[in-house]
Image (cartoon, rainbow, N blue to C red; front, side, top):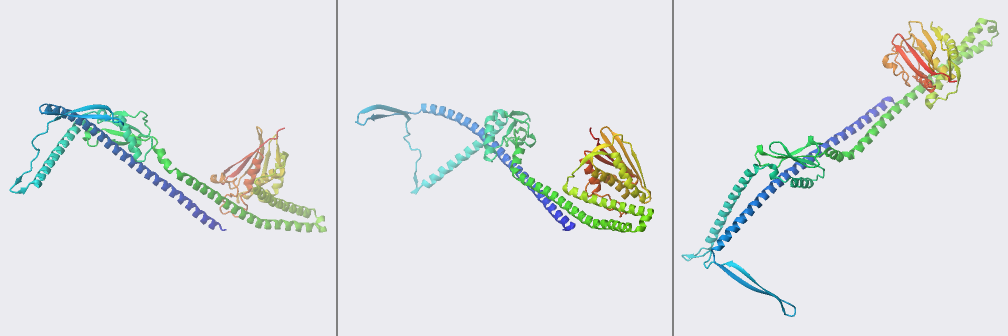
Length: 517
């Protein structure tokens, strides 16, 4: 699959996941907003009903008091009027008999009543031979209507007086706070809210005159207020303030069902990104292997051909008679053998990164001697570019426990990088040093090459990463050399760091633990 195709699929899938997350977030915001609006509306309706209940309770209390007073006055007036009227006593005898007909009990009930009037209450007469019953009925209706209108006006006047008198009273005299709590609870339940609440009452002067026993200040920023008597004058309004400490949790619980879907979407997005990373990594590794096979075919063919030609020349008796020619052929064979060895090391590096684990065959090694051997071997390659190698092997305790082949490859790779990235216009100067620090053997390899930018310096030890070399096209590689070096050093429980300055040079510093005796 082409890289462009992978990128297109990745972008489409990525945008799909991001769009899905965006829609889910928008959906959550819409649900939260809707739930808040529903909650606010229900609470406002409940408080409105509470104010109605409070007004009704006050009105009922006033009317009961007035009716009681009116009944008392009416009873007194009735008693006094009955004193001037003629009373008539009525008696009635009651008996209780058993099943056999015997009288078990007998009592007499005496009742005093006013004597009925001997005159009729209303008389219907005839005038000029015409019936006046319809006219009489109409007059009766007019009388009832007038009486109703009078009573209504009287009631309105009484209610108006009641309002004016009530506003002069304190809120504590007008409202029973225990009943107010019951009104609030009942109204909230009727509107589907079963959430714990706290309330307080504020009088017309803005002072808090009452608060519930378990009152908390939490949630006051979302408090609801409602006049207890909305018909009072604005300057005399008393308020009830209601808030819900668990409102946020209540709103969150209503949308908690969508949280798992968001988590699953995020997990899928992360999994997709990781999968995409693995696809690109494997594709890069596959391309690297293909390039390596192509280069390896060419790189192996040349030294093998050269060694084969040199071997044939050695069969010539004339070569044996010329020490100079013999020495030259031996040198060619030696150089081409090293070249083959380098290619084999690349194969080993590839194999190691596939396995993700290096098998080390450790033994006691004198690093001064090992580095001295690598320097001697590498001198010919450096001198080919008119360069020089300086070695200062000053470590007094150079013994470590290491794998000779891998450690040799580390030193060789660092020196080979110095040759690869030398300045074309200057001769190469390579400086190799060893010294001791407490419990450590220190190794430094420094060159005067093109150097590394600061932004690239942090990435040079990553697999497949190669520093951009501008117009320099003769530098071949796969971005595994320094990653291999770092892995081998870490497997030996050591550390490596790089110091570099662009157009000045690069210095690699290695620290390895000393052999413990």
